Image 1 (tube, rainbow, N blue to C red):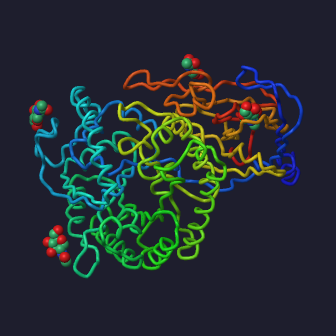
Image 2 (tube, protein in one colour):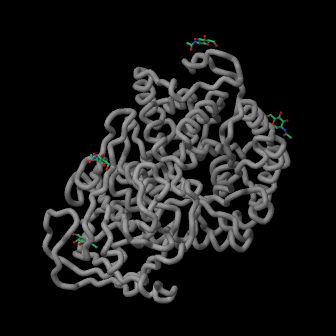
Image 3 (tube, rainbow, N blue to C red):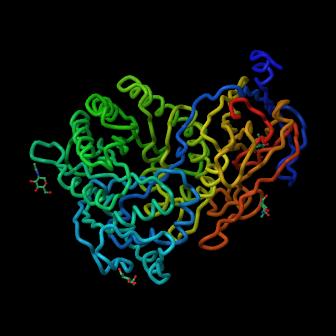
Length: 550
Ligand SMILES: *[C@@H]1O[C@H](CO)[C@@H](O)[C@H](O)[C@H]1NC(C)=O
Ligand SMILES: *[C@@H]1O[C@H](CO)[C@@H](O)[C@H](O)[C@H]1NC(C)=O
Ligand SMILES: *[C@@H]1O[C@H](CO)[C@@H](O)[C@H](O)[C@H]1NC(C)=O
Ligand SMILES: *[C@@H]1O[C@H](CO)[C@@H](O)[C@H](O)[C@H]1NC(C)=O
């Protein structure tokens, strides 16, 4: 029996990186040559550094999908439902710029909804009977492509048309989220203001009343990126007033039994930049008590002027740490202990960068955000978007899953909420290109069940230069379940592919109801593991016997 101290030193593991020159076709093992890069790693397998929400990886649907209500019918697609269900447990946030231009106009639009047939308020269709006729799906997909041009123009001109939505939008959202076991968050319009510039809650009240009558369990937000209200709508709302508005919404929620204890999240500010920071601070002053988590938004780059290099640049990836620490510090000051979430986030703002945000290379930003965000102190990260708006979607306009979808699915299945400490002891500039995070393996996953004590190493290799990873004793005596994601095409061109391979096999849906099996490749205990160039993935150390994870 080891004392805690012995155990700690036994578990303070050293990972060493060596170099190798020979390419070799083998996926996982490389041969050892000289040592031009050595990285020592510390792993603490004794204690959980922090624990994130089980819904850590969550997704959004941009409110622009409701810009014409019929597009919401896409959420009946069997394909989307199969893909979304596999990401549960997760939040589904419905919001974005358009949310502050949306007005609830209660009236059922019969002709749009082929399923609605009774006026009974309590009737809900069973999930299994949901069908979107193929011809309608086809039609909606085509029209959505056109609609995106309209939306892009609105954004360019900073002129947003108002949207009137009916019960149908809410019904479709709720049916989608509940059938896919996702927790719905609905973003309310904060730009309905009274003469004295406080929030006019009357429209929200009628929406809450309707949702309550249908017994829709859901949570709420109010306003999207209030820091740019002035730019988008010529209305200035300061942080203090917004906090007062949130307090008013909380009070209104408490009048409904169903929403008394429901979640309220906000203020969904853009990432800190001078004035925005002030907004967050003064918002928390007056509104912190009303919210369950403090949300902010993060994008690395502008979709209109970014490059492949940005997507692979460790300096760009590191900017997340700067912004996150800034927000965490502020929240800690104003409202200690309040969870902090990325309420909307992706690679590039302005709808993403076509050919980058929707291709394999986007995975580096996404996986690094998940790894770094969990380690720094974020509890939930909501990815913009699951489907719809822009090119940062996880499911494309043909409803095919993109590489980031598959990456997210693997993350869900393999990675547990417990973050473990993994530190570089010795460092060199180049080491920044090999990025590593450590969690307990997911023990709640129905698909893969790993023994207690299993850990998962989340890794990515942005490097062109030879490096190699050598496992320390203890971890090196563990069988490894390896999940290596690579482009389906070799070299740099492959980075912009819309397809991805898992352990050498192209990933694609078997049919609209069936996902492929995502099996790892089991490697016998070994001292060396190889991270392929421009690849990312997960190594589950099945017999690591980490006390923190048992
Ligand atoms: C419409 O509802 C009625 C009863 O509420 C039911 O008998 C009928 O089968 C429904 N029709 C369709 C097309 O679902
Ligand atoms: C709030 O908006 C409603 C209509 O949406 C309007 O009837 C009402 O007068 C407004 N209230 C205030 C105080 O402006
Ligand atoms: C990362 O990719 C490079 C590029 O070829 C490769 O040589 C290197 O071994 C990989 N890094 C690690 C840590 O395996
Ligand atoms: C994946 O693993 C399962 C269970 O271990 C096995 O039944 C199945 O055949 C495997 N699938 C593939 C494609 O290897």
